[in-house]
Image 1 (cartoon, rainbow over the protein chains, first blue to last red):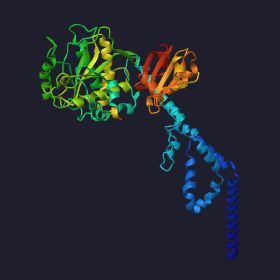
Image 2 (cartoon, rainbow over the protein chains, first blue to last red; image 1 turned 90 degrees about the vertical axis):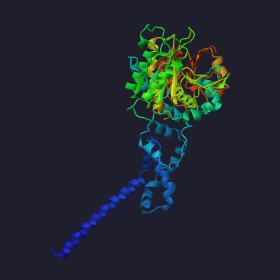
Image 3 (cartoon, chains in turn blue, orange; image 1 turned 120 degrees about the vertical axis):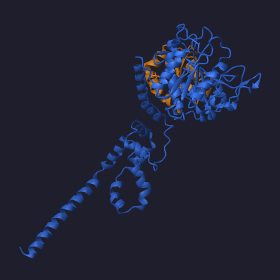
Image 4 (tube, rainbow over the protein chains, first blue to last red; image 1 turned 180 degrees about the vertical axis):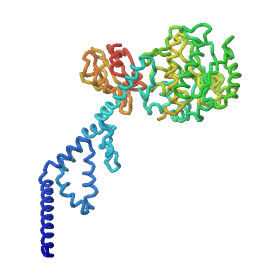
Length: 419
Length: 103
């Protein structure tokens, strides 16, 4: 084969290649040009995936068009066949887009709509969206119900999300806060600035130390308080037994280092019980300076016909009440002989507990009771006094309440109530 | 029976003067737990005919919420003969709401 034959053969091959390539390109171009449904198909795909595919159209038209380069020009044929007019009209009729988006929060559509260049859309005012969002949280509710059914077999399942909510606008009104959350004893009074929502919630109640040392002290100024079916002489069925159960839950389920002090200060008389308790408390705190939280657990005394019980997860539970001393009486004014630098911190702590209780377990707590004296709440900023049930409650009701009470305490001490 | 959205204008007619019991769901757009309860209420509205199912947006009809001392939401109030027969606070399952409607 001479050189001319070689050249001729290569020229033929190149020619065939060029013709084949041209035919291929022409067919592709023809397909694109003649495919009237292409834009529709893409648009339909956009619809079926929410707003995602609308986004590149708007980007192209709005931003890149004026700065088009070679790539833009090549793509022009593709884009000009897009049903842009229809797309814009549909975009204004936006309900179905966002509904779809809400139904598939994990889809690509959702990711793309989060892009900063996307026009801002106020989906909060869209009732349809809200209801669809409700559908997804409805599944959470069903899970909660499932948990509740499980709980019927005996195991308490801590509620994982608030089931009721207060308006933050209302909470910023101290008058609303006082009326809704507090019962003020006639002998004292609370100032408006003490009930400012930002102050109450601004207090950092989270624990500062790990559980290598004692974090929480539970004790009973009135250790002799009993329930309607408590066994005489058996402290495991009195407020002390309920306190031990609370400690056990706080230790085993929430991992706190808890000391249960079972000193008795009211055996002969309830008079001076708080003063008597100070001796024991001073000793316990000296031995355990790491204690951050002090809980004085009581059982309330009410009218004989008052029954403080509610049902949670099919279990009867004794209602409980947080209690604060303001070191102020109407008769004597500020009680300088009973100073407590932590009155506001005490108030903030009990308020945070109360709010968490009302939002996670509505109806389980009574209103926080405010009285005039100090009640040994001056030892720590995070000092609490809790009245768990009354003399008309059963031991079982009181024991049952320890589960949600421990959960509420854990939420606040872990800072989870502010998440 | 469809859910009736109550306002201060129609509350009297739809609730107080109703000849059948009325279940009112107090809610607001900012309330997460209300969104849990809302589908339950909607579903029940399509199933029951002997109880009227209504909703009150507390942001738009705060005087009604105030009158019935609705502090936190969602709150369900069951009215019978124009009077409050029972109140329940918090999101609930369908079976719980059905039990509440029997109270």
